[in-house]
Length: 307
Image 1 (cartoon, rainbow, N blue to C red):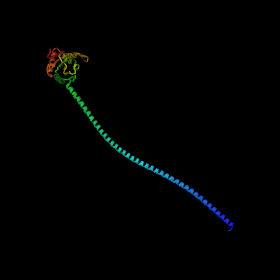
Image 2 (cartoon, rainbow, N blue to C red):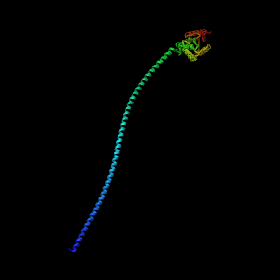
Image 3 (cartoon, one colour):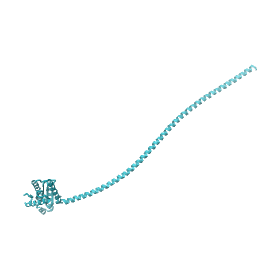
Image 4 (tube, rainbow, N blue to C red):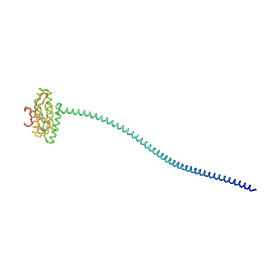
């Protein structure tokens, strides 16, 4: 083999070697690029895995939060259920209480109605009782008082005399009984009429009442006859003073229309117990003393047993 041939062969081999090296360098470069791409891909994959892990952790946290919220909601739901049950119980109690109040109000209304009815019945009964009381009082007044003058009559006087005698007996005191009779009263009726006579009697009754003490009694027995029961006259001088006052006040003129009428009065006096120990006996002796005063000309007084 010639040298040129060898040289060409060497050049060809060198060329092939260069091509081979170039191919190898290209392949190495491709490998390096692929390695870089793989590195980038791995990094991307690692990043994605890291993101997935983070997302997974976030999801776990979210799930935990969600689970917590669900648990809270469940607790809240249980609390609301308990609250609703309590509220329902309270509403039921309120309804029961309302029903009890309605029943109580109905019962109270019934009681008020009954009380009102009872009050009306009591009012009616009280009204009837008041009417009966007034009628009784009126009947008692008519039975025990003189209709013209309003003074006690013979019935009430007898009771007062008996009471005073009983009291005088217990206290060992004296009681004076004065029988009074207007002088010539018949002439007043004949001259001025019975209406004038009634005015005179009422005026005399009013004057005599003004002389009384709290324990004394003045009564009209009928016609022109009066009786004065003096319980606090302790002596003859006391009763004489009272008799003189009666004479003086009776003699004062009485105006009847345009007329002035003057009357006199005769007085008979008897004592308990010196003239008697019963009302009947004292009345008898006071009447006798009155007759004695009339025999003296009237318009004076006489004490039984004393001249």
